[in-house]
Length: 275
Image (cartoon, rainbow, N blue to C red; front, side, top):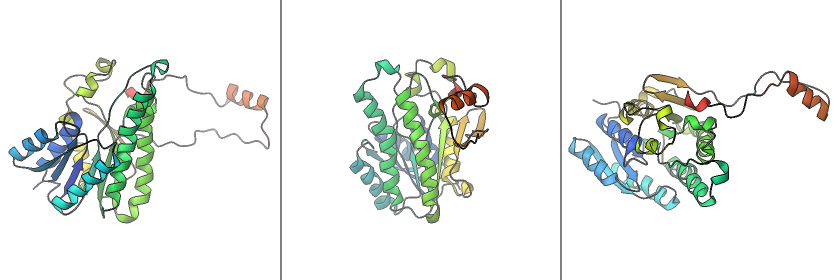
């Protein structure tokens, strides 16, 4: 028996890379899987079926709210329920700010942020219990050559925490994962060789997502989890940083003095996302 026996799960962006690995692993653990992507979904679903699992393909972009709603409807109509949603679909974009183009920035936000929102809100209408897993990224801490991508993943992290609070009453857990693996998307990263390697395959990332979809994680919600082949840790949520200075009034000179003494900022461009 697998840890996802009897569950019906949707994985977006599952035509290749990390999404494919999540879908295959979930199916191997007993889940019935709806495999979504703009291309490649039929082949992945067929491979799951050939391996003895149950899967159905759905082709379309989650950036279209009608597609997202239809995806959730398909899972419910075919499998009778929606127990899990993995919001994995996403695109990357690397450029310096002065080279960013509006159409590209829009597409990153539409797929990464709105796609997650559209699928999650559609699933929230029908889920009673279960788990939503949103794929974020270490880049959400700020990557100098990927403002749109960093911003989109930061937004998804905020969505994750918001949904975790809102859906707790319905018994739905919501967590975010920040994986690191060599995928076709990673291959387009100009810094790929600095932050990953070809032996960090997508299949190594799948057990975490399967765990979060399973009842083993029944007490885990509202968490952002960073996962590398050899490291597993939580990412701290935004919080007030000490010290907190108090004064009955603040003038420009007072603020300048505070920053010169006690409120010492970190240098810009620190590559915390590589941890």
